[in-house]
Image (cartoon, rainbow, N blue to C red; front, top):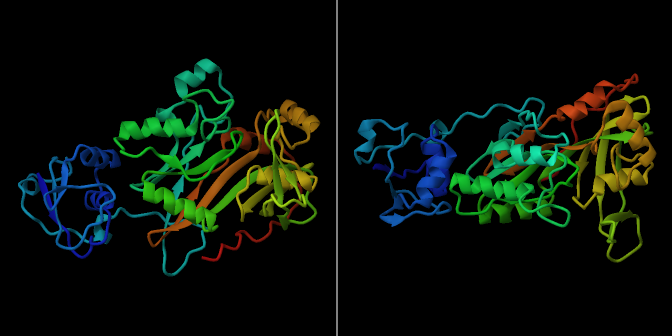
Length: 376
């Protein structure tokens, strides 16, 4: 048994977060397991992951962690390291704007050989699943996943049972011993790749849902569009109205209808190519198909878009460059969480980088590097 008495450095902290900070060398799955198996008691009562600790609480852990010395396993109440000493260091975020009152943590997506390319049914059965999830970061509160193109965010019509990101996250959660089904806080279109947040607790899900509704989660995308934009930086502010038909849902732009929703998309050109522009996009609102519908409405549809795009051009770029998917990728998430500024980056997947390599760059002076961050 391991005993810890909560001091001022760990007061007002959730039990699962305390375990993570106090025992940084143990894996997160270990903490989930001991809590689920009721091997953690606070003042003699079985502890819960989201339980808030107060100064003076006695935490007993009925499990011998490998990272704890034998002297520390004898049940003595030992002083704790400070939260700053127990927390693992976080790397800096490079070109990320910093605030003087906030720490910053950065995550980078890994490369997966099977993600982002079209697989046969047999390959999906063999490769796609919880074991292939590309987790950019895993915390006690949430995970951020690099979703591949072709994988639906959640179950629905046209998606076979067990073949959505949410269902893979459920499988992963069971393997990790979670007592809550991981739930995505927002969605990406099936054809879109990149970063997506999944909450690991109900209160975390409520927090992220509120933050997204209040537009304090900054979401950035890369897209390759038809033609060259007249302005290197701009904003598309046109309402979107959803329509449903047998062929699927679609958004109509600029409709004078009481059901139309406000939609705002900011963009800047990263590079002009002959016949195409690579743009970085920041969403102020997050409507269904917002980026795709907005750029199509100004005559610059996304390459590979089978719903709003230039179908003849799609066939041409598929033949010329091997583009077999929508060129839209969620490349960055920024938000504040528990007093820290979080930044997570995800570079273009290989199949999109391969397309870019085949394009002919035009002489171009890039605009200022960063978007203006949302006001908090």
